[in-house]
Length: 80
Image (cartoon, rainbow, N blue to C red; front, side, top):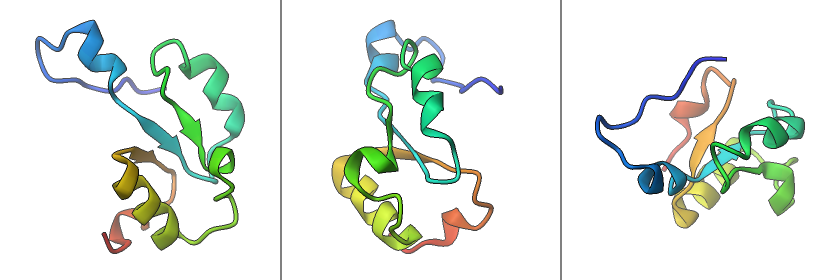
């Protein structure tokens, strides 16, 4: 799995502030192994968004200040 790059010199506290939302095309089972590094990690199903369209997920994440992790190649085209 590729590593996420952080700002050079980022403290451990800053790394823990990164909130991630796994899109529906990623397994909710990833939460377990990644929770140590990203305690605020969530999956769309945690918010009953697993059947929502990309725009709904995008707007939810934007409103909550959460970065989206997705394998969807066109997810970046969703309106913000």
